[in-house]
Length: 284
Image 1: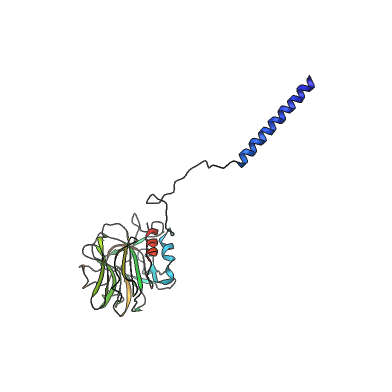
Image 2: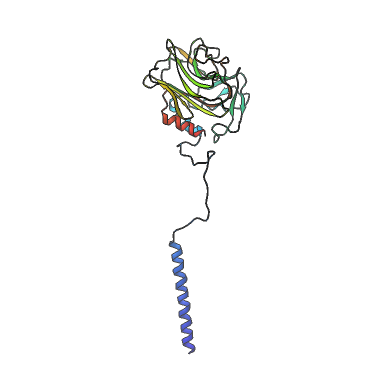
């Protein structure tokens, strides 16, 4: 009887070992489950869907055709607006450059500050002239509560008020965005709504012989005219923040922009609707 009980005990022990082994194998091959959960959100409380997460990446993807690209994020007192397009065409801050970091900031995932323009002496001049650019795109992020002022444009003078001036994006007296060119008469396309609510907005104006004039705001096409295809023929300079808009529809009394800017660029190509939407989405 003693031997039988010993044999039965060994059998029981062996059964227990085999049972533990089977459970271990089952656990080893069972589907894994995480012990935590997470929520991914951006400032709009939704996961990002754009292919670019920052303005630097979005603009950087298209700098092959950029004439210049300025972050406008230098420190207060700086005189040079660094061109990061690879062309080496640094701009010059005219007047006093004042850096500010408003909350919220445009392109909040990009480090750095914004450029505060005082509506009087603040603007950026570019270092070289261009002979009659007929295919181009102009872009800038801006915020203001003041109706009036030129955002970006083309003029015959590098720093003073230009005698010839077109290819201009400006705010009229109602706060609407206007994109204007000149060819014997003024040719403009105008946004239906105003953009002087103190929020950040993204604007792009494009023109070519095949596409005509297009004006985008916050990633969407807001005005266009395919019949306007030829701007004025002259040699001039692109400028950011100031030049005369005398004689244009809705002409403001003050031609200098008052507010903040970030990421200004001019391209020697027509940005597509997808490219514009990507640039706008990256700054939200």
